[in-house]
Image: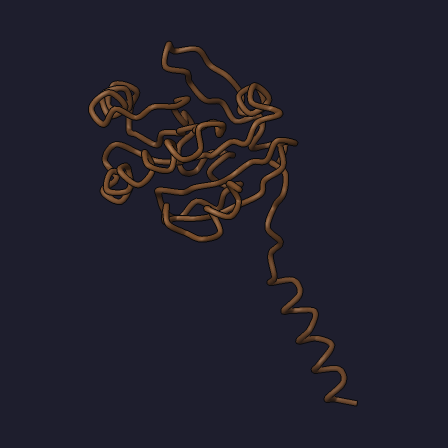
Length: 162
């Protein structure tokens, strides 16, 4: 009997620890505010809805992030190979001038937004953000096809774009 109780308690504990990978954005993440290159505020829902019907590659990055910058040549190759995909860059730079300077300096082509709330905002919390770059893929229906990749060469990322 003790063994059965222990087994049930262990199962419940492990089940509670297991975290499902989200396939949709939380309401809190959708309502987090971002800034456009021209200084306009937008909630993430407005941003992602703009690209409904298209596959969206999301790159959470910053111009001060060494891994982000080192991955740019591979990312640019990925862009050339996936011309139908929208490349959405969400910056965690410390301020907007540094963000804009980084986009220009590294000649990053795509759609650009500044994550005003930063790492600890609703969007960052939803992502359980612990590292950048952070890559995601959203399918044509607006569902999250790939929730987390930190390497541009991740096979799961490449498969999600197919």
